[in-house]
Amino acid sequence: GHVVRYADYSLNTSMITIEALNREAREQGKIHNVIIMIELGELREGILRAEVEKFYEKVFHLQNIKVAGIGTNLGCMYGVEPTRDKLTQLCLYKQLLEHKYGERLGLVSGGSSITLPLIEDNKVPKDINHFRIGEAAFFGTSPLDNRRFMGLSESAFEFCSQIIELKEKDIIPDGVIGEASIGHTTEGNGDDSGTAKKAILDFGLLDVDHGDLKPKNSYMDFVGISSDMCVFSIDDDRSDLDTGDRVMFKPRYLAVAKLMLSKFIEKDVI
Image (cartoon, rainbow, N blue to C red):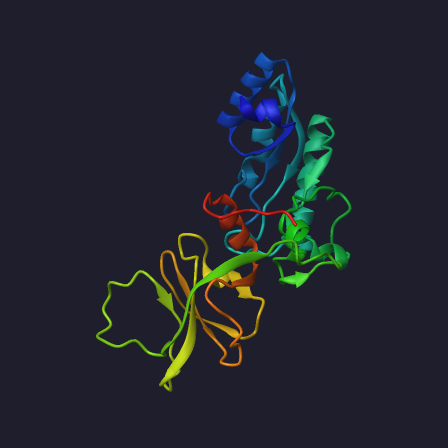
């Protein structure tokens, strides 16, 4: 009910779901638009290529459903790269369905931010006219090569953490190392001796994976992380830092996704 009430379009691969949307649209007196997703090799969502015509014909006869287009998803699970060949296959299905049923498919959804570099290389077939953009819009990059895309901003998000302890401590732990730890640490280089200034920060694995955060300051090096705290070593020449100070990180896509879902992380718009 909420899908039909609040969304004009939805992406679908399940006949059961589309039939439920049709019933709900009829009750609400609406026509609901669907984009049918086709599996082109990524093995995530999408109907099998051999079933496209049969599937489309069933949906085509639902009175409160309009097939607004077709689409595909690539690169999100196994990393199958979007190529001109893959997108051409999608365009061929558009032409086949339009010719057989005489019904125009307005949208041919060629993928997400990972497909955008093909635009720069002029490798997108002309029938592709729709992209589902998230990462590029918010992070300025395409996951295909993790490079900045066409001058977009890469600074939309910052993650701010606070130092809750800052002390000089041994570089290596003291004692027998067992299997009970739930944390993650860096690998030693075999020369770890003496002490180092270590800062404990107020986030842990329950909040975000440290691998999806990049310190904005070069004087910080990751040491280890547990469920609710993270440890970084601090260069000795940063004697101006103290407990209570804040340090900033540049979060990657997955970091922002996880942090935005956490009710324990404060969100500020600057």
